[in-house]
Image (cartoon, rainbow, N blue to C red):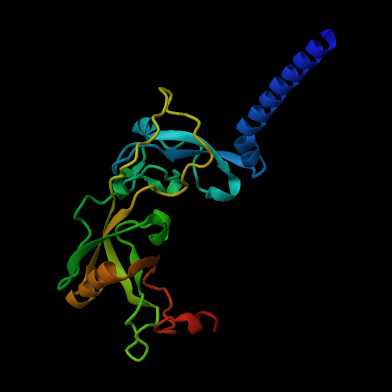
Length: 256
């Protein structure tokens, strides 16, 4: 009877120890996964930041995260040391890593409306996810290429064919805005720093609204592509080479 009691107690103790070990292992899994990927500390936007915000005022908007080194740009900032006197070049959105290019001297910021729209052109806006906008790295004054993809109808002789075309070249970008993000964002501590899960998004969490200057025909193409297809953007400086081939991308063209 005594031996059975001792065996029962021992079994309970072993079960408790096993449960503790499992919980401990599971709770440290994320940390070990990040550790194996050479984690680095990086500042990540926790709350929307308006363009023109001074570096001295940024801490309440930021959180510090450990992220895999392979997912962090070389210019990502781990602190605001040396950034005094600078301001944000554009609005920042939650989930975005703070990179050095986002902080510039105040005199380089052009007030809203300063970018001149060439005579005869009109401005039109559309909304896209960050991965379709060069990772959210575009700024007013850039020139962009606009790709339009259609599920069907892009080629009259092959109406059911899916197509993609770099339809508009070197379009002037006049404004970029971060659209409102509906989900709650983490609140940083009084020191402006907090540790967040490794699985936090590495790109802006919300869509961006972009405004471009185009003629009436190209404006119609953008509206049509937004309504009945999909858009993708490239950063296309004025000296970018235009090979002109292929005009319309289809499945066979992808492998040529």
